[in-house]
Amino acid sequence: MVGLSAEGQRVVVTAGAAGIGRAIVEVLVGAGARVHICDVNAQTLAACGQNLGVGTTLADVSDEAQVDRLFDEAASALGGLDVLVNNAGIAGPTGAVEEIDPAEWRRCIDIDLTGQFLCTRRAVPLLKQNAGGAIINMSSAAGRHGYAYRTPYSAAKWGVIGFTQSLAKELGPSGIAVNAILPGIVKGPRIEGVIRARASQLSLTYAEMETQYLERVSLRRMVTAEDVAQMVLFLASPLGRNISGQSIGVCGNVETL
Image (tube, rainbow, N blue to C red; front, side, top):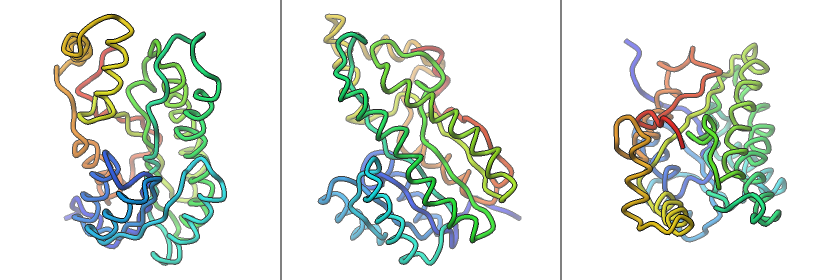
């Protein structure tokens, strides 16, 4: 019987040293995958590599030369590729559109969207050599709903959905499944910073702002990084081999943002 396993799968996870990325790596390694990761934080990258026994490359996914180095090193270490997890992303600025620094806009788009393109263009030849595989792109509930005062982030995450659906059509004949995961409000430092910034804008306390966020979630609770990681495992496993072109929410049903 086919089970939930990643035994022998060769996987690249971007921004895999902390947060959701670290949870994804832990779950995949626990399921038998061989994993190579990148991150921009040398200290957490080294610790993750040592503690989890994964390959590591210091790389910013928005930099083409660094992405090239990542895939050269990953291909050499893994001997090929079965799965790419485009996890890298930043929260971007919070503010009214007329207040947002164009440089901050570009940085958010460069990491959250262009970074996925740069990694995918290097991963696809490796996946085709293997006669198929999976690409899992990290979008967000903000890729399904408009998100006032978070326009760079929302625009990038909507872009990820279009990128995913287009790739699913393009790469399907090569046996490559492509899907997007849409996390909602994920427990951790990033969402705490987002809530704090929004609360400051609206002259609310953190608790008041958090309550407003959770009132928009049907299950009235945050999800965890492990919830997201388990969906990655499902899509990377044989159980997910016929799922493609989908935008899958792991969010408790975020109704609006």
